[in-house]
Image (cartoon, rainbow, N blue to C red):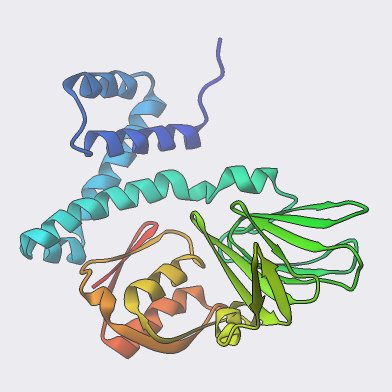
Length: 286
């Protein structure tokens, strides 16, 4: 007799069903299959009820009520919000599980880790990051599989090379950070110079602000709110969603303390007269 499916897996499956059923692409056959899945066992039924209740609760919040009463553009956003919440719940628990499981070092969301490599080099992993190391007699090679890291290579005749998303940064004589943003990389030179492909990179003018996370700070100077929220999201569990994309253009300046992740949005509320409604794994800014 097969072992019962773990409850956590059932919850994920139930949320997957909600995503499908509310996507606008579900067929009648899909709805029949869902009802059959729902009746497979009492545990399946309970997982389905919890997922349905979570979806239904979205319409009961103040933010959702305001969005429903607003212009059609905002009503469309309300549907996207619901989908965003469920997708966050389904996928966020394992922030990028494959890179983390295959990496030598990794951090969870909101965590940082300092690593001393075999040659004495120092690496600081930022929130939600994964790194693998491959040292040989001829080269010191590191692979940034996800997230962001700050590198301080030790003096050594072997090249110090960081690979990320198909690009290589050689920075034996530099202090630098590499960040993976989807299919793009951002390299910040804090000290010295490095080689990125055919380009030679020197110390970045705003390196202090861009690497302030190593000191537990985030620094913004006239950044659009949408970019600020995207950055804050990297340091806390769940999604942060703007109710109005026009609001996202508002410029934000300030210094935020990463030691108090829950206080980041409260600071924005106080300084910029914003409102935030908190849902499970989701914050709505309006």
